[in-house]
Image (cartoon, rainbow, N blue to C red):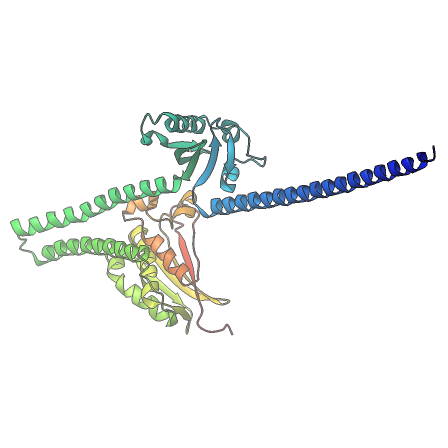
Length: 395
């Protein structure tokens, strides 16, 4: 019996030692689990950061490229859409996870994605079938689809401007062909008349030659406009701003068109503030002013009146070309400075539809602005004004 306390003490020490061991082992296990959990959280956070960074890169790429991009999985569910795509389809909701037709509300895009996925699985059909023109939001878009392992990408490009330019250029080719044919035919007929039966009356001969002169001037105007347009599109129109006497600039331009106005018995009046100076490239502004004056003389009826005025307004010089002709329809006013635009007024008088567009380019290259005013009433005429920077400070 005397050994019992000793045995109990030994047992208690063993139990305490075992408990301490278990406790320490549990502490170590808990510490290990805590470290593993912290490591997993760091890895998760790093993965979230990488995913956010990758998405931000994709969004930036989507803003940089012209195409609108939509990525779908094999079930035609959106896995990514560029900011342009979200703006195009007018949705503020999260695009990821939604079906393509729900996101785009376009059966054509949904069918194109299905065709791309089928092409990727079977490689049947042709790639041309995956390049289509689809109407979206009232505008034509060229949509190209490409399949990859696990989904497909749709790239959308707005081609409305390209189609508009294509129509404008086709119209321009048709117009210029017509405008060239008219003076060339007239010149040919007059020359044939002179060659086949030369008139005995010198006045009649002079009249025939004047007809040729008129048509040659029309051809020269068209050639100059085409040359100016080619230089503008090629970026070969440097602007040299120097103090320029506005009165001299206008006088030189009026002299070039004096014969044209005289043939129609039109009165051209210049009203220029004395000593007016503008910072301008005289050659370029002379072309722009010449285009405006040419139009005013052309559209004003015989014995009409054309005014060229210039004055100071703050830090700008304002130049105006006005006439008492048929005016410009109100609906045409916002578009008359577009390239190749020809309203009813232009079609009546012929022309390439480039003169006002070239004038707008020249004025804006000088840092000015150009605009037209007309109430569209016959006989009330039209006024086109543009500004140039003044060469000196206002008094």
